Image (cartoon, rainbow, N blue to C red):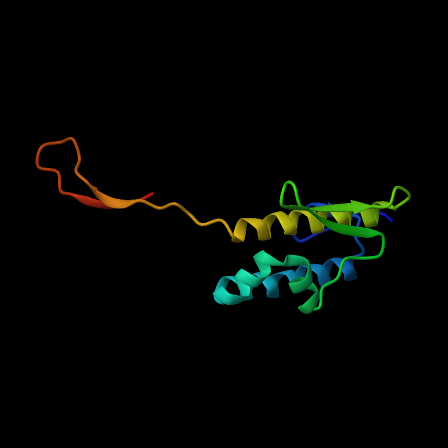
Length: 127
């Protein structure tokens, strides 16, 4: 299939109808994860099943497995897959990595800092 120019200006071999379906559902899932802490926790704990519950499934020829050793989801495609399936497999891999990042808590330090110049006022910082 010829590559199609996407919204980002880059090309994608994924069928434009399928690409829109993937991206639209993904936006819904991310929005819900950002606004609903319980949903986010479920998504991080079991991403594949939660995504499927939200109506988004990996295409035929794409296999998603959880590696117990590395605690990472791995995406694989059949050796004889066409470029569209391979591209969608990459799409899934990127999204699963993003979901893993949703579960990472930021280590933030909050405090006051005074400048080196005499008479500087204290100001709050967040790292």
